[in-house]
Every structure is written in structure tokens, then in C-alpha cells.
Length: 73
Image 1: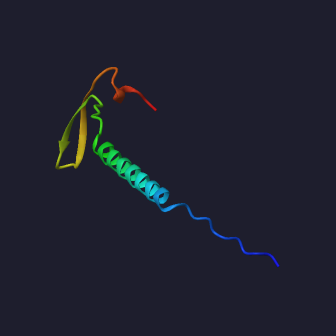
Image 2: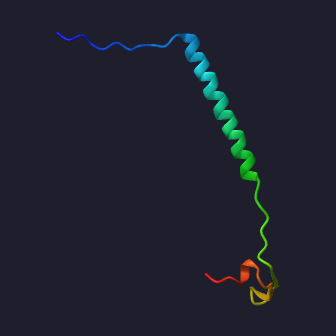
């Protein structure tokens, strides 16, 4: 008859150290992610618009040359 495989357990101090490292890494990652999520770069497309409430449209009045609004896809 074959014997059943037994589980090998790591010593308690090793498990505690691993758990603390995992918790610290998770906390650091979460803090960095929350900080980076709030940081948004400012963008400018270099146009001037006027919104009309009557027609519910925005009219483009000016597009700056060489800006991102002048490039076509």
C-alpha cells in the first residue's frame, strides 16, 4: 500500500515574516495606486469655443496652428 503524502509546513516565524512582507507590499502598492490615480496631467487642445444653450452645440471659433487639434487622424 502507498502512504498518503503529508503536508510540509513552514516554521511559524517564517510564515509570520512572509505575512508581514505581503501585507506591507500590498499596503505600499495600494497607497501608490491611490496617489497615481489622483494625478492627472493637464491637457490643452488649443481651441476656443462658444456654447449656445439655444441650439445645444459648441461652436469652434479658433484652432491654434501646430496644436493637437490641427492634426487629423
